[in-house]
Length: 156
Image (cartoon, rainbow, N blue to C red; front, side):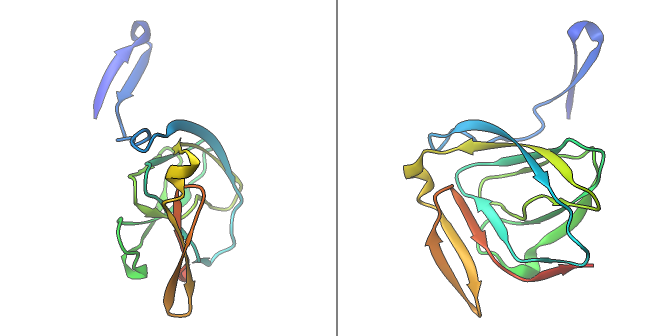
């Protein structure tokens, strides 16, 4: 990690921390705030999503830990999902195509800043929305550049 001292020596810049993929599909960077309500434990994950044309970054804005659930790009297999608790001073950058769960607050409402590509409708229509229906996957087109998949995975 490269550090630079800037602003007359009063600021340390931790430089270029994430590989952002925001413009390859004709998108433009979009910054949003996500407010996540806590869920009761144990948590059953029933949804995973991916953005095939964009990376997505989450930076917590509160001093609260949160849960990250993530799986490699490609076919989603429930056994391949990694789940961990992130500290309040850790952000997450998901590369394009990486499966992830939405931000999971622990105990209290939590706010996150998010950076993602805002894609044109024509480009975004190429993604899929996937839902688990018994033992097979159903693929539908989504308008927002997101692929979503349902599964069952319980956190204690």
